[in-house]
Length: 170
Image 1 (cartoon, one colour):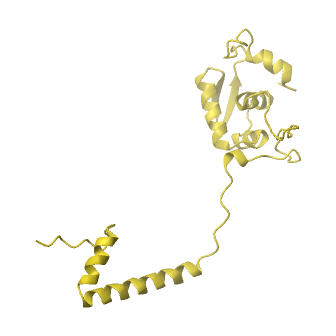
Image 2 (cartoon, one colour):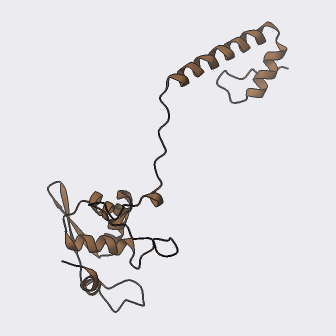
Image 3 (cartoon, helix red, strand yellow):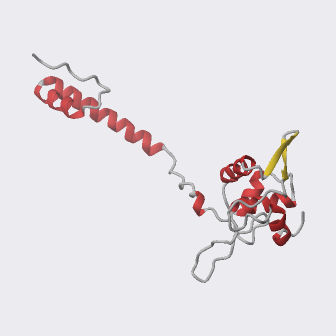
């Protein structure tokens, strides 16, 4: 009993090729069709514009210190760009200075993606550190200065204490 022929869109290319070879004239027709269709695809591809450069990964996004919106930490002697404060604290510092700052600007100033800032805002809201208030089409953020810092080492301090140390204006 013969097995059924695979459909034209089937992924079993080997079975279709071996069957088409054994079927005489049908093989030549199938081969001609394959050559014609691949030639048309090549013509279509040659008309396409050259591919754009791939988007940078979020870890590659850095805002230069000379940017009017952003401040990226300068590279240390070993070439790394780590800082003592987390991005969560950077968001709090910026929102303490301007409670109506748009997240795109927050992201640019910190040197991370806007989506990362959205996740940080969600974390801070869930943790009870900030509160979001809708004002028209914008958001206003209220920081709970009395919220304790989360790690046991600094749990005796509040967000307000830390902002007093590092924020230029509140």
